[in-house]
Image (cartoon, rainbow, N blue to C red; front, top):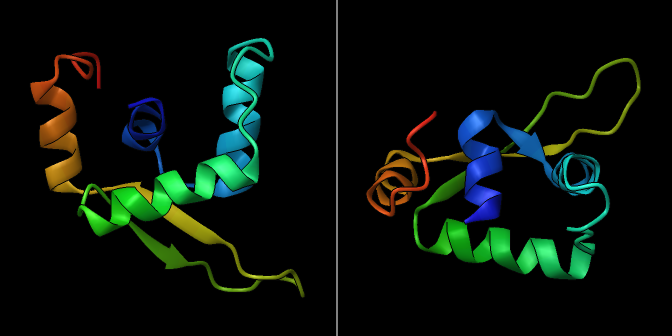
Length: 85
């Protein structure tokens, strides 16, 4: 639910999610990539999130952004965790 909460606020790429969780929780939630990406894949498999690649800019590598889907938002809201978004 924590990852869906992040995605409900805005689209993010994996490293950005890790840093956001770490910073806002004062290092309490320090997810590793090996933990986050299986969660994201499972969210995509269940149609709670979807991903897309960014366009490369200024020679930088493209990033894979994740965003919450309508089904993901509805499920999150029905759990009572998204009354502020």
